[in-house]
Length: 302
Image (tube, rainbow, N blue to C red):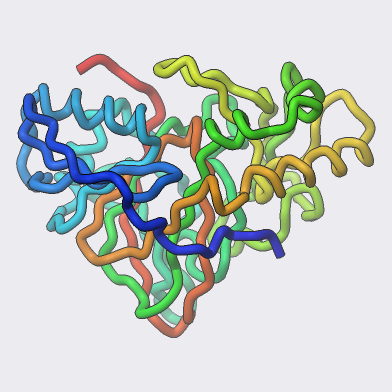
C-alpha cells in the first residue's frame, strides 16, 4: 500500500489575512498548500472582483475551501463557472443529476442492493482527475453532503513542491518524457490496483501527457504522474519505466507535500488538477458518504 500522507492538517503558523479589496477572510489550511475563504455565501452570485480574487487564490495555493455553505446543484454550478467551462459527467453512473449535465454524485448510496453513484467506497490511491483523456480536467469541486464519522478524508499533494524537491538526477531522467495514463471508468472500477499492475479491457481510456508540466497561469513546473492511473513512461523499457515511476510516486506522496482534509457537511472545496494530486482514505462502508462533484474543463475570462 502507498503512503497516503495520513498526517492530518498541519497546524497553521501564519495569521489570518484579509483581502481588503474583496472583503474576504483568507486563512491557510496547511504549510503544504491550500487556503480557506470565510465570509462567503455561495448560494448567491458573487461580484466579479470577488470571483477574480478567488481564482487568483486557487492559482497561488492550489486548493481552496469555502466552508459552511448550503448549496443546491445550480448554485454549485454557478460557482464552478467562475473558474471556467464545466465538463459533462460520465454516463457510467446511475446517480447523475437531471438538473445539469455537469453534476455528479460521489456516494456509497445503493438502490436495490447496487451502488448508484461514482467511486462509492474504499481507499483510493493518489491520482489526477481525467488524466487519461487528451484534455484533462483543470479543476475539480466537491460539495460535502453526508460525511462518515471517521475516514473518507481527501489528501492533497502539492506537485510544484514535489518537483522542486526532486533530486536533479531524477529531474533529468523525466523532463521531456511522456507517460501513459489509463483508467477503466464505471461504478466497479478498481480503485486499489495501480494502472501499471491492473488488467484493462478494451473499454479502458488512455492518454499520454508530459511527466513534467508547466502551469499555463503560473508558469511553474509540476510533476504530472500518479500511482493510480500512470501506467508507463513512453519510449523506455517497461522494467526501467516501472522502477522510475515507483521512485517518482514515493517521492511525490511525501507528507511534507500533503494536506489531509477532514470533511464537514457544507464544505465546498476546489483544487487545481494541474499541480495537485489527491487521494481518499478508508472509511466504514456502512456509513453514508455523499459529495456532489463538478469539474472544470476549460478556463475562460471573467
